[in-house]
View 1 (cartoon, rainbow, N blue to C red):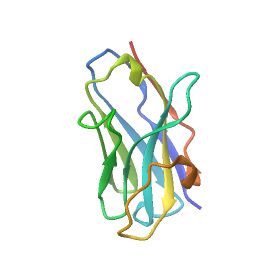
View 2 (spheres, rainbow, N blue to C red; view 1 turned 180 degrees about the horizontal axis):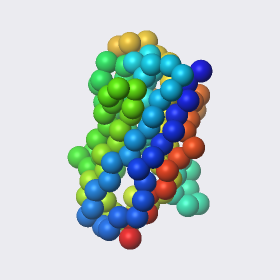
View 3 (cartoon, helix red, strand yellow; view 1 turned 90 degrees about the horizontal axis):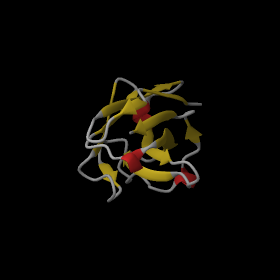
Length: 123
């Protein structure tokens, strides 16, 4: 099955930018719908953005215009811009096998494959 490994997290000042990566192995990323989630301390894991197999994206209202998802060469990316202290948390990528033209989902319970997460701190 597919394995996911995130990287690129770190400490950044408010207003700054960061680019997270999620390396996909075991299967081709083209077979999966992919998502990025975030878990802040003491809070539930929340959906941020997703991309389906053919590249159509969806974003949560809270990050629309600031976070961008894309994929290339079996790697998923999340570009973070205009970061705020409330963006602090552990960022996870997730994968779900899906029919090619179906929309990606915001529901975390529908993603069976997860990475270990990467910490982003905005301060």
